[in-house]
Every structure is written in C-alpha cells, then in structure tokens.
Length: 81
Image 1 (cartoon, rainbow, N blue to C red):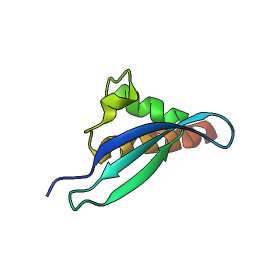
Image 2: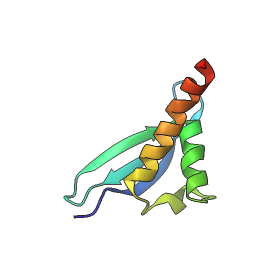
Image 3: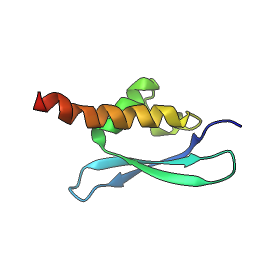
C-alpha cells in the first residue's frame, strides 16, 4: 500500500488576507484530507519540489507536505532562541 499523495491544489485567502495553499491528500483507500499551508509552508513546499506553478505539486507524497509544515512551525522556534 502506497502513501497519501497530493491530488488537488488550490489557492485560498486566509482570514488576514494573505494567500494560503490548500492541498488535498488522497489516500490509497480513497480517503481524502484537506491541508492548509500558510505562505511560509507553501513556499517551502514549492521550493522542495522545484515547482513554479501549484499544479506541479500534484502527485507528490504527503511527506513533502509534512516537511513544509514542520519548516513553517520551526521558524517560530528558531525566532525564540
């Protein structure tokens, strides 16, 4: 059984007016999860995939999304030190 992968990507407006990236992860059993990435996480994901357009993220594994979320979270930990 394979891992979840990005099956859809869209741009959304956050409550503060900034752009966010909403990715749909599709699991091998057909289940789906929506994951919202803030600007920092979205940029991290795009950079890790060498993507210039959001559609180029389709097919990437969930681990890339996880890593982008970790990078976004760690920026606050780094600032506290």
